[in-house]
Length: 78
Image 1 (cartoon, rainbow, N blue to C red):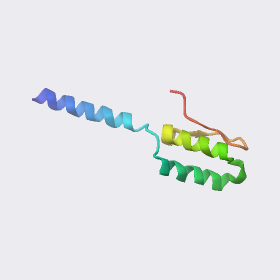
Image 2 (image 1 turned 120 degrees about the vertical axis):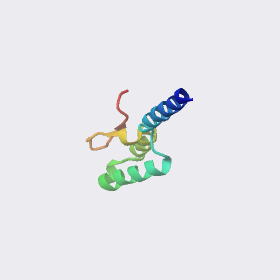
Image 3 (image 1 turned 135 degrees about the vertical axis):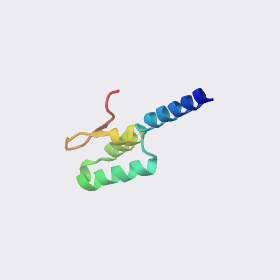
């Protein structure tokens, strides 16, 4: 019984650690990308905005934005 408890605790901890790198849901991603658009104005084109959404939904807080005039959004390499 004790082994089973330890196994379940270990699996729960591992699942929690893996879940930390998940992407944002669509609403959270829209909030982040709306903030980018508000800060950079017309430089966040529709294409860049879509890239921003995809990036935040895929890798969440790990999404990286370039400092280029028209920003690009990328997930860090695994």
